[in-house]
Image (tube, rainbow over all chains, first blue to last red; front, side, top):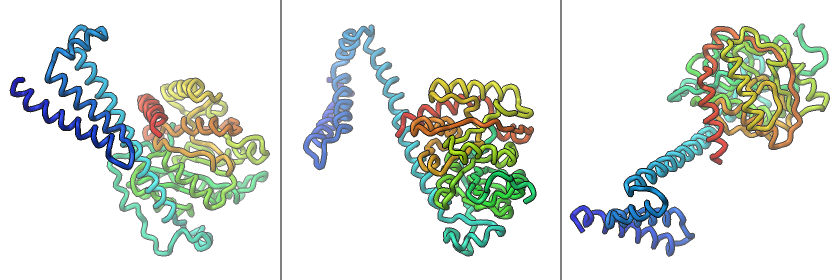
Length: 147
Length: 234
């Protein structure tokens, strides 16, 4: 092994072993994501230890060069990762929306012509401070209903 | 109240107006609704930076403030949830920028009151779209085609914000698409819950100001992407 291989393969192998051990033995439940990570560490270690492995795998699936295989895998991994983070952001956005909605409904208030209904509702405490001043959303999105 | 519809009650109707920086136009819209006897108006101020909330309060509306700008879909769901909590029997989504006519609300509610539909969808293509830019018209037509193929619902106007729901229908619908893709999601919800729907001819008035504030035709592509990604993420 060359210096680079000595510097990278052992740490990757250790990471793979840790993740695999945690996936298999750590309670309370089996963790598929840890297995996936262990597989990725192992594949990286093997590809660095013996670059010809990627060439053989590439040939086996009809790709001419091992380098091309790496590029394809990275392209797919990029798409997958992008979607993963998009999904996570979207879920976070939905949670924020729920929170914003809860506050909006809790602090609802009515203008003077409907004051008589306000007390009955109990949803608009007197002296409610308008929250408009706190409306500092970073980037406006499409609320205008003009279609 | 001289213009109050003869054939319709207004006390069981709740109007939901999603508004973002609509302070200049909202007052006129609210006066138009008040003149026709609609007292239950919910303005969801979606994090406006102008005086939208103050104008809405001055107009006697219920005001719900999103502390950050979330999008029209989120604002409408907030308004629907609030109105349902308050006991609304009929819920109408209505634009705050003067594009919709308050005179047509009773017509939109008519099939719901007769019990022939759960949801009434306004259609500018069955009615009129005054001063509509040509590009907007064709994008909307493309949207109709897209909706018919993807959502499997036969409508003539897929992105009209003028709609009416019965209480039962509104309670079933859950809008998770915060932004403009909510219009397509709403139609999906109608199909998913097998709600009875009908289209009602309405008039949409385009003005230079509202057209500029509305969606650009190119945004349609972004809306389609949002729609599909939103469907994938649960």
